Length: 119
Image 1: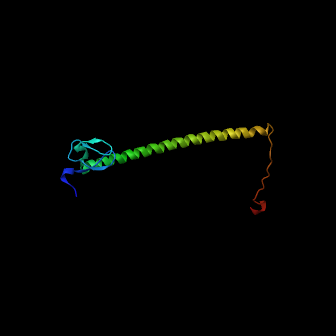
Image 2 (image 1 turned 135 degrees about the vertical axis):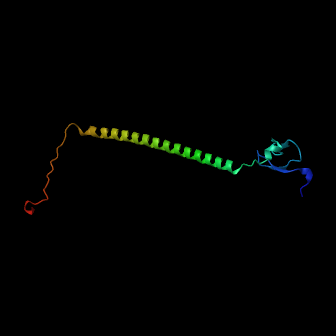
Image 3 (image 1 turned 90 degrees about the vertical axis):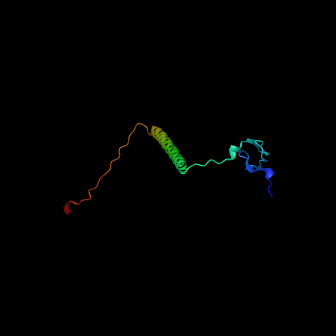
């Protein structure tokens, strides 16, 4: 049974401990020792317009953050691709070193599929 002398049951905003304020001011948490004003426990109500504005601002901030992350990923991918192309070019140059200066010519015979009598 709750007694009036115990005061109001509070929850510490620092350590989340539940305790009675014993009608003292300032209210002191028995667990962590933090002092609270009575105003700390009053919930501030916002109107619907303020909540909608806050939600819109949060959504816009999240979208901007996502766009920034995507642009960074695209830039990193482009740099990685460019570095990979440079490495491939270097490897191709290294592979041709062992061929020497002689070039081989290959002759290829092409047969005409159209028969001269089929015209």
